[in-house]
Image (cartoon, rainbow, N blue to C red; front, side, top):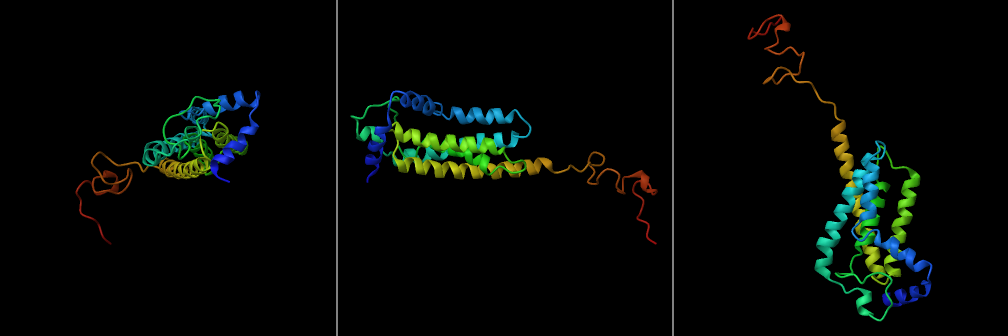
Length: 213
């Protein structure tokens, strides 16, 4: 069975109740808005701040790889352009079909939560975002704007972007957590309180020769 046949079979799922729900849901990520909003909300809480930053970085990385790199290189026609007779429930999008940008952003956000460490993201949040990411991929095929391989590729790119973002956040948070060593007087290479040549508290005064037993 070719990919168009799969999409044609999915057209049997269409009904007056499901169509508007899917159209609204898939439109929430036309520019990654749903996942950007998720990242911003997570930034507002101390426990999820690191995960929120990871979500935003992951979505940005995914967009660079997908929309600015792979899509312009491949320029795969969309299924709705190949079969223009199909009834559309969303505005006909332009640009390359491969990979799915909506799916990339969705799985980037989900993967940033999967791989978040110290602290980990809440389990309920991870589950909910993962389900939403999978539904986003299905919605793109339901709307006849992406092939299954577009969605699969988007999920892979998004997952790698989420992993990279989570590791980057680990490095940045680890760097922030390092204790700072108080420095001595201006221009001194010695920590404060140490027996430096310029420290009068060592009993010898500035410039005094070192005393040996």
